[in-house]
Length: 203
Image 1 (cartoon, rainbow, N blue to C red):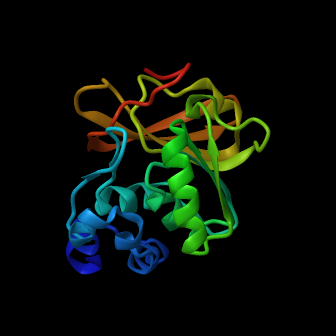
Image 2: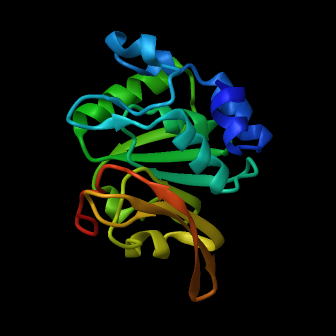
């Protein structure tokens, strides 16, 4: 998977490659889907949500430029897969899931896999986690019409937010916002398709 899906498509960060190789995706999937664990595609999970394709997870983890000492906010826990990958790249990961059943299942899976630096919280991900802010980086695994104001307010100076921006039903642009003083530098990282970010400051 690492050679064919990641290196061949431009993922070069050694930490990301090692993390993708070490997290057992099959243990995070529902049993009927485990035979498909390492194909490079999104897969359905409960409540009309998906587990992102491995390449997309690797791309976002590389884009957020982690060094290992960061406190990271992930929005959209879903299955918990990306949170586990981020857990190997950062010091702390706080992950928000709006659907209580998904949050509970992800919490159990992450505990079984012994990623003790991940905390799963159930709530409106568009509002961030003000009680745990500020964050060094934020990774958003659903598409928003714009950068939610909470993410801008809860990120450290020099921190970054990686988030797909665009229409809820069509191709979105993966964007990296880098906080510099009163400004946010926006970088376009290419086209992706995600489920919509639901909440007070999303769709």
